[in-house]
Length: 433
Ligand code: S3P
Figure 1 (cartoon, rainbow, N blue to C red):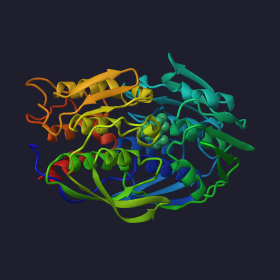
Figure 2 (tube, rainbow, N blue to C red; figure 1 turned 180 degrees about the vertical axis):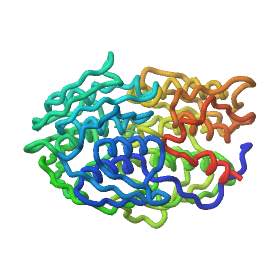
Figure 3 (cartoon, rainbow, N blue to C red; figure 1 turned 60 degrees about the horizontal axis):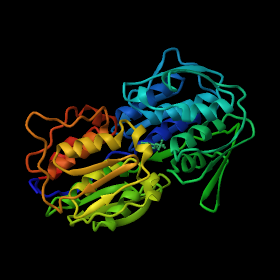
């Protein structure tokens, strides 16, 4: 491989999902919540700004250390200006849930990527709870919503495996009389459930067969917490794959969140032959965490079980890069949801990897990737650039593909990386000798 080996010890920034939730729940508690390790990426800052616009006092005290003075469940104020959600689907969908049961109205706006993403999936259950919506055509942003007071508790079976939809309904349930129930046919990330319990909400989870039935009692009183945000496994993923691909690498990534609802990539990479050791397993902020030692190993393509998709939903772009450099063929299926992320990640990665010289076939619900068997990819041709389409994970995945290429990979725009991993390029350059 043309890159130098990845060596040493690194830390990736705090978990994006946990960071959003700590700001939201902190703003809904009465008193001061303190957070360390908060991800200071643009998506999370959009959540912080929105909570301020609705009355919370949120202060940055130092690197990743934040203080939130909440207004209490039911205490949010009507924002005077639109809530600018930037690129962040999580901020938008979860806040729609929060507002749905407050007697306030709010307008949501976002960038061109976010303005294409479907909001109907949250509008539907939140309308059943009594909220009103005026959305742009196709149920997209910009949209204005009117919360319901009191809202109506519902029992809602998720039609798509989405932690964002689940969380929106549970958050709406906090200020709804009675018990709000979400039924999850397929488990998705459970940070909301863990953190709601931590803040003192009455929340139960019952497993019936493969389904999870989650109930939250309304008129909740949340108690302020001290939260330590673990490192984001979705950010660690780029370094796990980079160290696996580049010969001679031996990298320790410290403090990585390993919630089983997030850790699918590690299992899949191990099935492909990766060497990933979990050191010093512990708990941080109510989440399982370990230091990961990753050493270079040759990979072999596999058929990826579609059942693992929700536990690695954001990691497919970087898995596709790993597959492009593996032996044999990797087949992925059941990934329709990837088409409605920050970009259509199936189409975007098929185009990007093909441009970099990989052999990729796009299907309706996944990619079939014929790996190079460890040979470097060609890289992007002169004057050609990968289109990242305002999608941070396409940009970071293709930067890692660049390490595994002969001529390097040019991407058109690395700015979106700051939505989730502001120091990514510096860390990659500092690690890959
Ligand atoms: C997230 C849930 C996932 C994920 C997103 C963050 C969350 O979306 O893709 O990056 O924090 O709840 P879906 O739940 O819509 O799949």
